[in-house]
Image 1 (cartoon, one colour):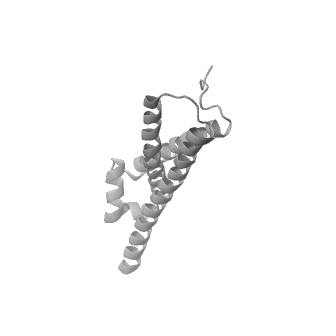
Image 2: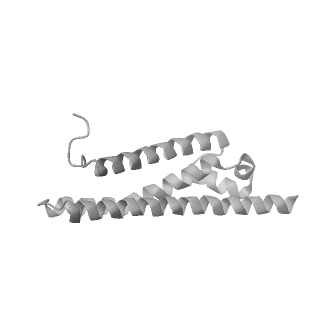
Image 3: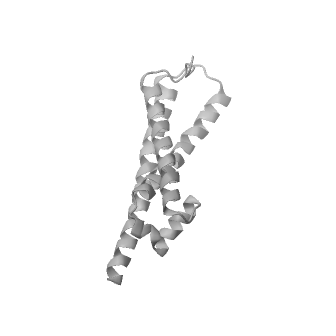
Length: 135
């Protein structure tokens, strides 16, 4: 029975890491697509300082994808995994020892991340990226 629990713990730990990296890759694809679209398809006479800020944002987007993926995996993690020593490490990353608190925090981060990336994709696809968002 103990070997079965250890196998489940290590298996789900790998799942959290894989989902986190998938989030990073998806965000990197979105970021690269936006970079290409904004700089080559819709190239205009935007000043260099603005392009530099956009470039920094393109590199930071995958980090947001990684965090969103990790939070989503923690939200879906079985309680038995989160009670294990390996799961306790992930709870420490979230910043709580409570499984319910970790699920709530991870759910909020996941939903905010998904909403952010969805809004970003919609703004780029509809070409409303340069217009004021509200108004």
